[in-house]
Length: 283
Image (cartoon, rainbow, N blue to C red; front, side):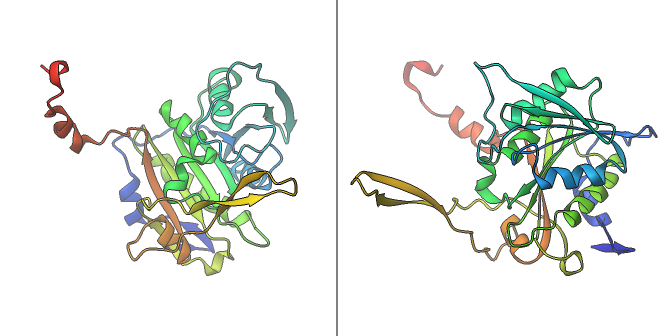
């Protein structure tokens, strides 16, 4: 990773992995950025992003009114979606009684006058790596934007004591600047995990695949004072494998970027399944 006057800049080798087929943007108009999260409207992570991203564009916030961690890509339906609008530093802030994915979709469909250039979700309080990303509402909200062909980034800061969201927000600014002229392909979105350590101790930036091991969640059987049996969910951090993945990179002091796709098709298995003899159902 290159450092320029103390700021993080994504190196050219990393950018080559992220560049899509789209033509570079030449417009000098201010960037339009939508922020959301799953930690809630008042979370410090989204405040840090707003502070730093407001320096490079016009920012709108559309976030759940309450914490919605672990809600994945769930949507709000069957109930009225309450929206409270306010203004901070000349920007619109929407507190929405809905899931994070619904907050993003509502903003894109109804609240914003123009399509944003970027949708950023986070900064999440805690890392989202490996198969845990399937449960993450931070990732789910970014995926919702990718459905609409918008460049989206889910940003996560490793959990720890004295969490400082400032360096993570600074890195997002540099990443957006790099992607502005060399965008990723539509249908791709990025999951970024950042170590909870001083900026000068971060080793660099790695573009790595998702760790595919099963999550280390487990359920402890307990009994309450009245004798009723219940289960308590617990979680243990995965130890890094020897292969370089998002878990390996973060555990070893790197910022990790993992490109995700909304296309979940396993193309290698299409021929395998197509060749099955499914009785009278297969011609």
